[in-house]
Length: 162
Ligand code: IDP
Ligand code: MG
Image (cartoon, rainbow, N blue to C red; front, side):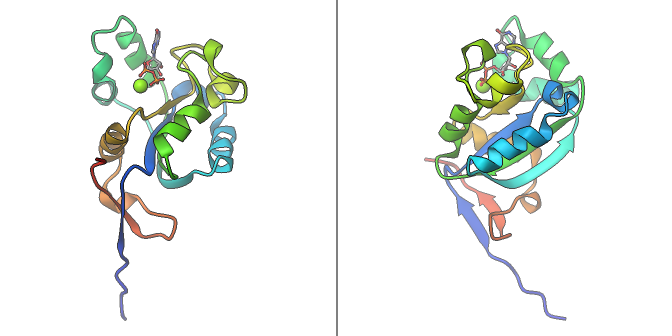
């Protein structure tokens, strides 16, 4: 039997990383949110249903460790299962931040994911990377090289964004 080796696709700046947070999962909004992501032109490069440990959540939100909301955020993020995914699209980071809306749902534009599904600033339905370099770091934290694919099914190799 012959095995054909697929190519690796190298991406710079065309991916972002998202989490559907515990509140949105427990309220059965996974399907609605994935539909919005798909209709906005993002394709799924990697995805899993998982649950964060305290250490994983603290590491992921380490940049906020001095903030007053940090311990509450870690508690919330570990309170139930989540969906983590790498999304691929041109200009992915910026376009996804637009699609999810402001951190505070009261300030989010109508029609954004957070406006529709967030319960509060903390329980704001989804995470979206804030830069190309963080998108890559977050994608690397959750997915191995053999778990991410481009639209043709080739392995997706991530390289540092300039
Ligand atoms: P972002 O998710 O829009 O990038 P960040 O400022 O990076 O917002 O904050 C990370 C997460 O921490 C938010 O998505 C939210 O869940 C939580 N958070 C941010 N600010 C507050 C706050 O003032 N009170 C409670 N939770 C907050
Ligand atoms: Mg952030």
